[in-house]
Image (cartoon, rainbow, N blue to C red):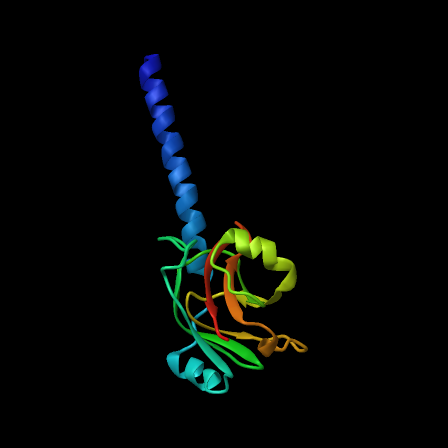
Length: 158
């Protein structure tokens, strides 16, 4: 084999390896996600909510791979989503005293936020509010990818 053929094979195999790795990072959370709560389950929990808001795809730092859409309901004991999130790893749900829609704003305000818990499903979710956390002391709910420091979505509920 001549050098050009070896270089071409090496380059194409590296590209395929990188694409496979990236595809695996994207697909793994989807493959290992637990079953999403049904619409009936979400509606039942959401019926006790104090606040509702909308996750929208058109936020400043949302894009084709990082978005959320649907109705988020915030109650004293749980936060629910009737909608969808872009699949991804290590999503965390936060409450914030200010609305944010960029990674820069999130990082600037993170010390004033409270982390509620993990979001493990991408269509509908129910996340328990930890004891001692009063959602009425905050104004916004945020989904954040902790592993990659990536803004996913947010909504102002009051």
